[in-house]
Amino acid sequence: MTDPVVSISDLRFAWAPGRDVLDIESFTLNAGERLFLRGASGTGKSTLLGIVAGVLEAGAGSVQILGHELTTLKPAARDRLRADHLGVIFQMFNLVPYLSVIGNVTLPLRFSPKRRAAIDGTEENEARRLLARLGLTDESLLSRRVSDLSVGQQQRVAAARALIGGPEIVIADEPTSALDAHVRDQFISLLSEEAQRTGAALLFVSHDAGLADHFDRAVDLSDINRAGVNA
Ligand SMILES: Nc1ncnc2c1ncn2[C@@H]1O[C@H](COP(=O)(O)OP(=O)(O)OP(=O)(O)O)[C@@H](O)[C@H]1O
Image (cartoon, rainbow, N blue to C red; front, top):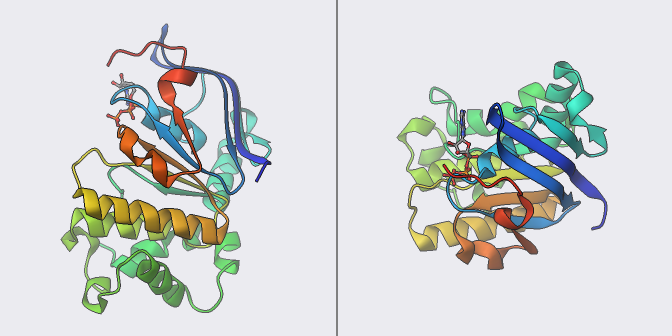
């Protein structure tokens, strides 16, 4: 539980020159750890996740993912690292609307032979198993287009897609749209259990401090971010 899978130091990021959104001296996510990152809306949580995921480039500093320095990797190597080792649950889920539920969940396997090789049995069975563990068992749902599912159901599909093939790191950006509190709590418990089962470290961000109890550790972004952001 002590090896960092994400290690950030002296990170700075600005969307506009001279206006830092992030100025973080140190941030670490350990292997298998379930970490809750809280922060008010507009304080840079999604931006930080984008940097960890390698879709945004740090302006300065070091971002290490599983010992690889993201800031000096070539784009193709960064894409490979992301495909093999990171599962991402986006705030808007980013599901592919014309694919079925199973098609969406198995999508990361198209981009990562490593994750495909990690699966016992067929891809479809693994997708069904993960969906069932996350509470989606209704057979009639699985053949539907994802755009026909409820927000809570889409969130579970996005989570199964992030977990498939056992990536070492799963990052989740909680949707700001209000999900029923019970549905949300149940989702986080299941996601957290499944991450623990697969050994993935989970980095979950939300503006809602009340969710911290679901996690091993909680960090407030305002405590580690020296950039005073005013959205
Ligand atoms: N694509 C962008 N271009 C310019 N500025 C952006 C962009 N995305 C975010 N920002 C700005 O960066 C700051 C941090 O935004 P970010 O989305 O990271 O916050 P957040 O904490 O994730 O917010 P929320 O909880 O509402 O999702 C905000 O001031 C926002 O306006």
